[in-house]
Amino acid sequence: MNLFDGQKQLFLFLLLIAGAIMAGGCQSGPSQRPDVHSYSRPDEVVVRHLDLDVAVDFEGKTVSGVATLRLENKTGASKLYLDTRDLEIRKITLDNGPQTTFKLGEEEPFLGRELVVDFTPETKMVSIEYASSPQAAALQWLSPEQTAGKKHPFLFSQSQAILARTWVPCQDSPGIRMTYNARVKVPAELMAVMSASNPTAKSPNGIYNFEMRQPIPPYLLALAVGDLEFRALGPHTGVYAEPQVIAGAAFEFADTEKMLVAAEGLYGPYRWDRYDILVLPPSFPYGGMENPRLTFATPTILAGDRSLVALVAHELAHSWSGNLVTNATWNDFWLNEGFTSYFENRIMETVYGPRYAKMLATLDYQALLKALQELPEKDTPLYIDLSGRDPDDVPSAIAYDKGSLFLRMLETTVGREKFDAFLASYFESHAFQTMTTAKFVDYLEKNLIAGDQDLEKRLKIRDWIYGAGLPDNAPVPTSDEFKLVENQIERWKTGTPAGQLDSNDWTTHHWLHFLRSLPQSLTPEQMADLDKAFAFTKTGNAEIACQWLTMSVQNQYHGADQRLGDFLTHIGRRKFLMPLYIALSKTPQGKEKALEIYRQARSGYHPVSYLSIDKLLGVGSSD
Ligand code: BES
Ligand code: ZN
Image (tube, rainbow, N blue to C red; front, top):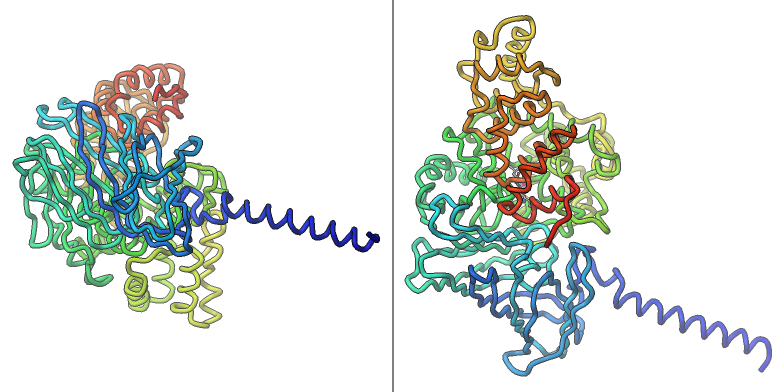
């Protein structure tokens, strides 16, 4: 063997090793996983339909049964990679026949465990017999005392962002779409509803059949079970709630059909047949969740005066931005929430007029400025690389409010007519598809900028999407109504007692602006003067209560202490809990009080809320 041969052999050997590393890397490495928050490999095999046959057991706190996945095998693969978390996998069969082998991977924080199922390139269906754990992070099992009726238990799910895998084994990535059917068995005195075609009355035997014929990503799988009633709001809209809540809910959401008509006028046909709202018990950890055909909503928006229904406009708008055109990964979350916040405001403007919409836009802008002050720079671009992070932990005012301001900037620069036409055709041409940030930028360049170099320069698209902070072409929302509020604050600061201010026609939004615009630091006497004049401590409006209670903690106003304890033990909406626990944690006495309240309240919160508060207060979670 001469030297040359030796070198050649060495070269071949190295080539072989490199090849092996690359092949190995491809099999288990991220290149086969387009979404860092999912173990699935949809480029090989993709789930096209889910058939769910499950029973809901309130005693055991489990959802158990069989999930049958219908597959499209693109590459002749013989392994199916699925997401699971805290699931017990009992048995897996192929095409309704033989049992097959499978492996569960190591548990990883928030991702759960990879489930690898062996099958053949010809396999069409994989049936997984499984049970969820009582700790399933998507599910909250409520005791009768936690409901309005106090007689029956209640269950609801919250699958976004990556919690669907805690109650259904699936390819849990927003880049995947499937249709689904479900047969759900529940105790006969309860009604089951899903993000699908729904019953309007209880079934005598507790068995319910559902169909979702439009393909949806798994984060939109949803189930709720409780003592529910239905009431129609319009021909295509209605509301579900406990009997004790249904009348108030129907009053509050009376404008839902109008919103639906307004939304269709703006962005094209509603593609989901019906739009209903389910009002949940107060422990629901979010304001709303856009489960298709059936928005899940917190009862904290039942203010009695319809003043918090922008949330309905928001969840309804997701029927286009999010549910119809879906963010491909959670890095692209702003495509869901930024678009939706913009559309929410446009629906509100259409139904309630520009003066109202401008108040809302101004409040959102204030939230954005606050977030920009508080967040590290790396979290302020619209597109964020979330590798290694739990998508549910990422602060979102940027995705929502910077995202919507970006669209507002596009609108004001190119003109409303042109921008609306652009958006309508964006939805039309990408219906039931997923969208990445890069694909959107490309579409924007081709269809809105269309070679206009001057326009391209003025828009600064890349600064908005990939850059930190706010670019200098950001519009500044303003509100004439809020100028009136600011005038009254000036009067108060210069000595007019609170009781003599002109606040007769003020709505929730005037009051929120009023409270947020007061000086940061107030004396207990000033707080008492405000409380005496406006009875903030007793307000039935949860938004105003949260703002006031936060200020009360910050200014050590103890007149609100009892309401604070009440609020924290009866409401589980994370957006309200966090600022209050954060404010309390700033002083040693406050922290002690926070821990004392939390000890009682924690068991009533949904995992989404208590896991965040555990981290904040440094309390070890026992689950
Ligand atoms: N899709 C979100 C809720 C969500 C986001 C759940 C991320 C899990 C992960 C929903 O549409 C939403 O934005 N809700 C807001 C209300 C809205 C009016 C801003 C909320 O819950 O506060
Ligand atoms: Zn949203």
